[in-house]
Length: 245
Image (cartoon, rainbow, N blue to C red; front, side, top):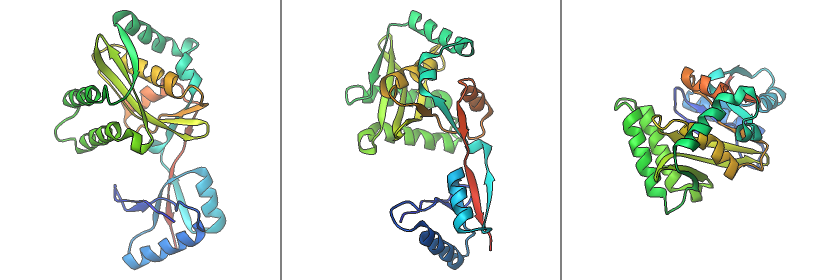
C-alpha cells in the first residue's frame, strides 16, 4: 500500500491507499515511526477515516478537526445558474462583464497554452510578493498543471476578453458525482473575470455532475468570505489524527 508523507509544518502521513490491508499498513507505519523516533500523525482525515481508526484502533488516535482545511462543496447547478437573490451580486458582475467585453470561453489547449502561461506570469507580477515563497510555489504548481494537464488527467478552461486571456481554471472529476476546481486565476482589474470563469468553467466542464469541490480557504479571511459568498451546500471537514500509546 502507499502512504504520502508531508513535511509541511510537521511530519505527517496520509492513510494508506491501495488494495492491501489498511490495518496492517497502519501497524507497519506505527513501527516505522517508533524506529525513526517520529510521532505518528495522519493528515486529511475525513469522518469516515476517523470512524475506521476508532473501530480498528480504539483509543489509539486523538482526532482534531481543522476549520482552515475544510473543503467547500457546492451544488454545481447553483454556481452555473446563479438563481435567486443570494446570487444577485454575482449575476450582476457577470452581466456587466458580458456587456463590456467581446468575450469567449475556450478549453485550454496547445493553441492557447502559451497565452495562459503568459497571463499567469503577469498575474504573478501583480499579486506575488518576492518574499512570499508559498505564493511562488503555488505559481509553480499552476504552471505545471497547465503544461501537464493531460498527463495528470486535468482539464482547463480560459476566458478571452477583447482578444486576450484574462482568466483560467484547472480541475478534474474526482468522484462519480463531484468535480474539483484546483486552480483559478483572473485579473482583478477586469471586472467580473473571476465570476465569469467560475461559472463558465463549470458550465462547459462539469455541468453533468452534482457537486463541485472548490477546496479550502487555508485560513485566509478574504478567501473565506469569497467562498462563503457562493453559499456552499456543506463543508467537507478534515482533521489531523495523533497516535497515542
